[in-house]
Each structure stands twice: as C-alpha cells, then as structure tokens.
Image (cartoon, rainbow, N blue to C red; front, side):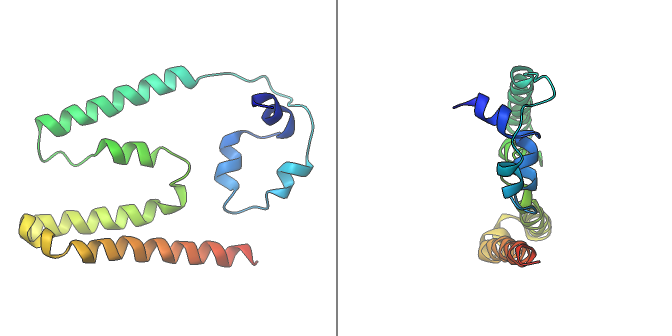
Length: 137
C-alpha cells in the first residue's frame, strides 16, 4: 500500500499528478490502471542535498549582506508543487513590496503593509476563481 500502489496505479509520475491536478479530471488516473512500463530511479537524495545546500547558501547570503533580495523560504515555496498555482500572487506582492521599500523605506512599508497583503490575497482569490471557472468547462 505505499509506493507499490502508486507505481502500479499510475502510468505517469507523482509530479504529473500534482501538476495536472488543477487542470484535468483525476478520474483518468484512477481508471487507467496497469503496470508501470519504465524502471523507477530514485534521485531524491542528491536533489535533497542540493536543496539543503542552496537554502544554506541563501541563508548565509542574507546574513552577510542585509540587502540580499532572495529569501530561502521563497526558494523552498517556489520549488514545491503545492504553490504552483499561487506563484503569481507571491511575485506581485514581492514586486510591490520591493518598490515600496525602495521609494519610502521601512516607514512607508509599515504604513502600506495592509495594502501589500491585500494585493497578494486579491491576486490569489482571482486565480482561485479562474481555476474554479476552468473546472466547469
């Protein structure tokens, strides 16, 4: 009931299931049952180690250079499949935050934090509505 169930149930990878779950009908994956025709490889350990090294490097850069723009949490969220439909909301909020801090500094940022949060939430709700509308077609 673990990985064997996934191997023999799906012809495609777990990545495809998560990536296409927002745009396709999942009944295809449950009805198209058969043995997997390709041999599985397990590159998870090298990729995990590479991800840890990248996050540590980003953390080090943020500590050593206070104005460093890349956040390790952003890398982790950006590399996950679960945030795939929401990346534009994060990007818009980050751009607005960057512009506000460049123009008015931390004081203006503190005064406009609710506005930036509203833009991120509004963009996310808009994407959610588009996704729900795509389910009906």
